[in-house]
Length: 197
Image (cartoon, rainbow, N blue to C red; front, side):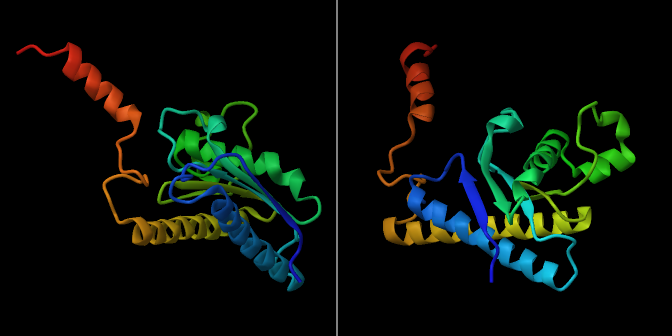
């Protein structure tokens, strides 16, 4: 029996290649896997509790965007899992802001930790995807966060591979293969007004 869980998705940066319904199902599957594993480990006595929370940050967000503006999803597992949500978020933000898990920063570079910062580790960065987890021991939080980040990355890559099979690889992750205005607007401006020749 899998314990209850909730997934709150705040953004889908892949909406063209992974539609919202598919993206929701993808994250639901990833969190469901974590819930089943956590419940099993709790029943065996390995984990102290059968509740936990995760924060996943958007791996597509540019470096200059503050962490609190790029939360992709928040998940809670088990009754009372929401209690750990602020801790999981603080761990994810700490990793994004400092480039390392809080356990490393707190233990070896305490001068980098401002007042009000969370004092424990439990966040990972796997191929650009940052996940903070809270609810177990710091080691167990890191383990579960690692599994979730790797699972997320795999599911996105798989979904995009299927999209490419259906639409062709193209040059852009867009069905219509037209460059986004973010790029064409600047190029048009340069060609129109800044020619020195």
